[in-house]
Image (tube, rainbow, N blue to C red):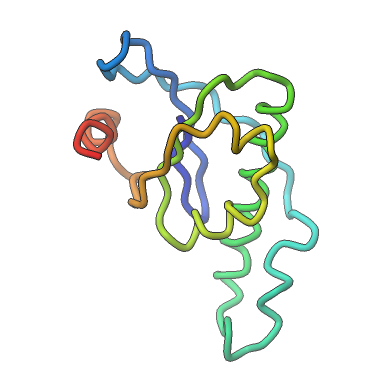
Length: 126
């Protein structure tokens, strides 16, 4: 499972048997600085006047690239993504076919600042 916003990528593995949920935090992959082409569709200042938003879009694309690499390498068998609407929208633009095939679902919610228990509860209620 990936919990993402415009600044952080948190990875978890469900250690419980379905339908149970018991998350184990995984190490966060090292993400490169910048992702070429991300945010380029926001050149118009009316569409996106905020440089911070461009950086957040860039991070979402970079996080998605890391998930794509893991999916292509078969390091991910199934994936649930939890992200705020804007970040999830940016990530969808970059989903590789292999990632789409492994995607169990998406929860549109900002959970990166929440505890593991709160994230587990959000999954249960989704």
